[in-house]
Image (cartoon, rainbow, N blue to C red; front, side, top):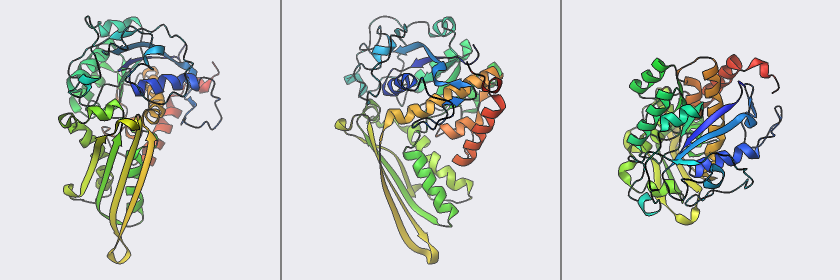
Length: 369
């Protein structure tokens, strides 16, 4: 049926765990209710129950060979289990391509499964996947591009949830346009995370006529994402992504802020925090009469469910795009759901673009399935 979304996952970590749990947690969500955690119970005629997982790839020996329903709970995953009762999906986790996916710190906690990687393109074609979600570790530049090419060759849409620049890169964007394959990217912007909060505060300052002199955003966490990011050479695109997500809001308003007056990025790994992320945001500015003021806030969130609440919309938006014959980077959805889209908009403008996209491309006036 048109509304079914067949999903393949690369990287069965905490984010994948939250997403899979969430699909079954919300599978009976009503269309017209306000449901905590969901932006769109029904997105253009596609409901949560329409999402079907058909393939999964990982390299960790604790996950390869297990059914996806089991692998999402295997170590080193440590996110909150909010829906343990995930049925057997008949989707074995297959050994994927390693490339540069495992950094120096992850080598201590990830044992590579034996054997050769599967033919990813063939699997995507045989499972008739609609969408591939890239959940590889930060810094997986070469591995990400390899998987994205497999998806392109198979005609599968892509959610690029990590800060390797694909959708915002003109050459990659052209490839998606030429193949008429849609992509939403790059680098997931969580439901209410440090990035969208920081952007909102900056836009509040701008709207109220305030000057921002300096700002920082520090993040600590205890999942393997933060462990991996202790390897600073893997952080280049992550820092660029998180920083520009905020400084772009100054640029939109024609405001220049010196580069040395902005620091945004992951800061440290604290193992006992597990999947909880703690962000500290500080903004120093001036209000009426050039009188100085300071704003400080602390945000504590469970990182992976915060991400899944956005991805669950991204995959459905891509399905609508495929049904409508739309290829290339989706501007509005990327701007609303990602930190580093091809075109930055303020979040309210991007939200309206998403709603317009849904209304224009919805399935048969949301006919009941």
